[in-house]
Image (cartoon, rainbow, N blue to C red; front, side, top):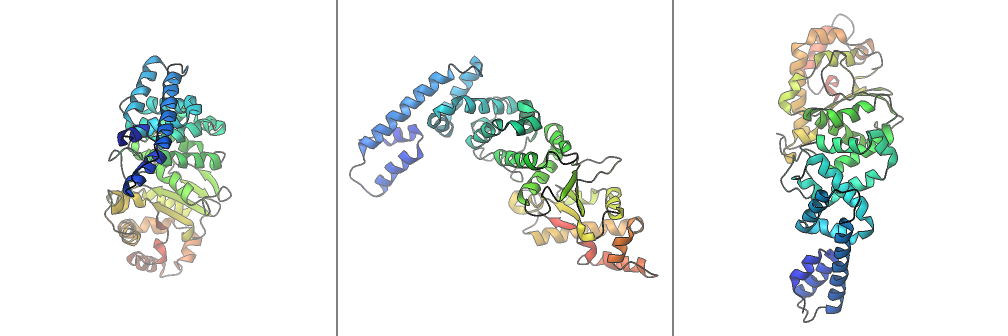
Length: 362
């Protein structure tokens, strides 16, 4: 006879499921030898793990004790370490990185998905060098303060990715775009920027990762300057080989505050041959209800609402926006001849016109 609590104590899903299957199938006997052997193995591994913790050179005495407390309070974390005795050093080092980034009270340091991800990243020497080593990694984890984690319950913001998935996006960007002109500006903002800047950067990273087969390939991206802040230079976010991309991680009420000067620079750029080659990307995770803070049920609703916000901008600034259009855009939109100005007004009044084709919800 084996008490079910002993199986759960082992933190072993395969073992637990075997026993539960037997119970659910009303089996009279459960393979006791298998259970005893598995629990003995787990117990031996746990004893070995505790011994290894006491001799870890990368942890101070207080850190070793803190790790023991975390392992004893989390079945998932205990299972991770017990099942990977040979990786105790790297897993404990990853745990320490999260501890240093978020503090002793953070639930993130018990999240096994994050611990595994950090351990993997720290083995990638090229990635670590490009983000500024372990200090850079700690800053990236620390600075995205609203990011949730897979075992964090209701902590964090639903409109952001879990921390380990966010680090996946960071890794993808650094691996594929680090040598693109000015790409390091984004990494610097992720480490040191304000929260709204980090969330804008996280949106950009998600776009690079989720659209890797389209415009966001190395051959299509020629320059990056992802500052997500107003400045006198009104920088672009991404320059594609045939256009521009601008990332806006905004809720609807903030869209009216978009920089008109920056918008005019895009429309007047000699590199822009078609309105379709200007891409203003708006973060669906800030606009849709399903992510917790949005107002809209679907992409179409959100797109129409954003268009209405831009309609107001066009209406209020129509003269200066019209004057900023380069000749290619004017020709494409039919803004030539004596009726050019009135045609522009007609385009503004119709949010389904080609004028609004730069708006994309992603």
